[in-house]
Length: 171
Image (tube, rainbow, N blue to C red; front, top):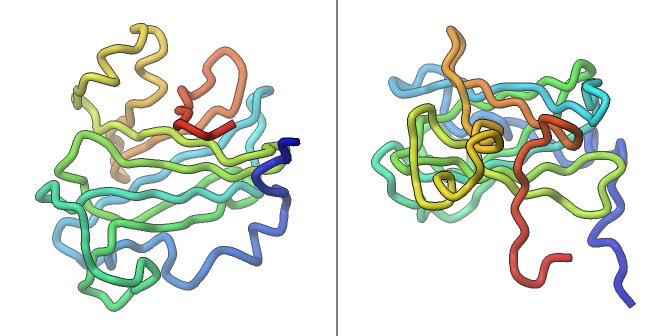
């Protein structure tokens, strides 16, 4: 019998975030950029207790090989970060723009029986997967530039639902 992959709830706000989790690089890093947005439910309301994880390459497109994803020593880039949403559903990471076309994103939120996987594409990026999507769905995966860096909103369901990915063996 299948069971949910996890019990998702409001405990994310105090159990899983850790100091420095959203800062993949310090704000003083010469290539630092802000990746931010809002997580919205199907009615367009902010989700105040979601948790987002990102994985990405460094600015040269290399997959980081440093041990310890939680490492935050001011110079080691591990390519992994975790951020909780605030009461208005907003999240923010300090990172570098990847040398690859996208950042992998996982979303944990109340009401989900399992985590959701998606991608955050850089503006003007292209690859075979993105190109394979219908034009009216493609833009749900593409970030936009704003004065603060890169913006990417996650919509959990409804008309503007973000495209989510399924992997073999995932139910």
